Image (cartoon, rainbow, N blue to C red; front, side, top):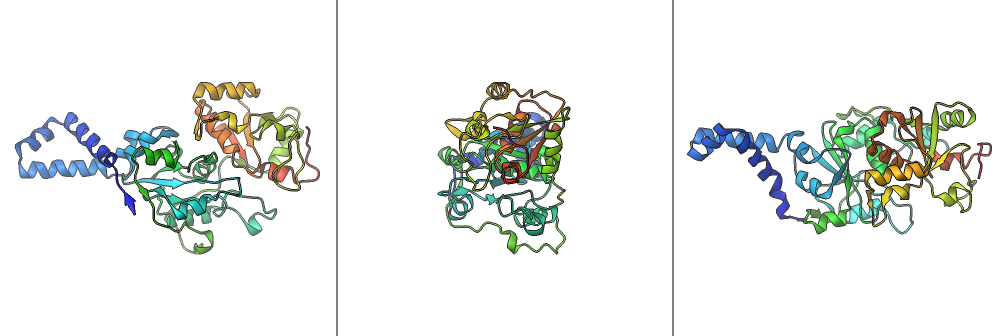
Length: 359
């Protein structure tokens, strides 16, 4: 069942106001009641409200967007909402919660575990590695997403990991100015009158996708993603052209706390910097980033020069919270082209017998 709210009409009202203020002839024609002019005016409203890029741009500006701006864009043609929830704790399952509901009305679920490289493409069995382009494109088709759509990624209450889904969409070829991360949870959306669906729904499954079919969506090999070989080169070179920023907590970074996954050594890569991802998120609501000044302070505290000309490689436990660091760096003004994700992260590095580790 879909629940409706008064906010639904706000994009139309905004668009009508803009048209009225920007076109005296259209406003006059509407006032005269001329049938021909009224039809033309109505067509203008429809064109402004239901194109894939116009009305959405009124509200969806920048990487991080408020719940209020998302409410204003909900229902616009060409704006799709994506639940990117993922949880490390065993007592929560983002996919199961999405399927059971509630969820933002019309939203789809992007499963970072399922839409990922597996089998021969991931012989080490590492979690949620970036998918091959064909799988990603097939998933986008199944989710009814086109390359021109604006995508708003959101999470359920308390979810601090949505940056991975957000980053994945961009890395796989969706235009960076068409992917947005909602600052606030599904709970805040609902509390502010946002429409929700409450009936059960089925999320897209990779096993059910036909990868032999040509896709409408055009994907690319994942951009700004590096492997262990590239990171080893950085760690072993005295004058490397890159630095590594580790998003794990300080206790794990210094091998003072055990790794949550079995069989991993503790510590960190030689020469790496530690900026715990929790220092970048709002402590009262981890679905939101801190303000820019606080983000810059966190990087400075960790010894990271956000303006360095060197590449910054973000690492973490399994490639999820590294995306929090990458997103925060861009929010601070760093060019995203100079920031990378080590996809295997500590799940790979800490599992190897001969990778260099210090504590």
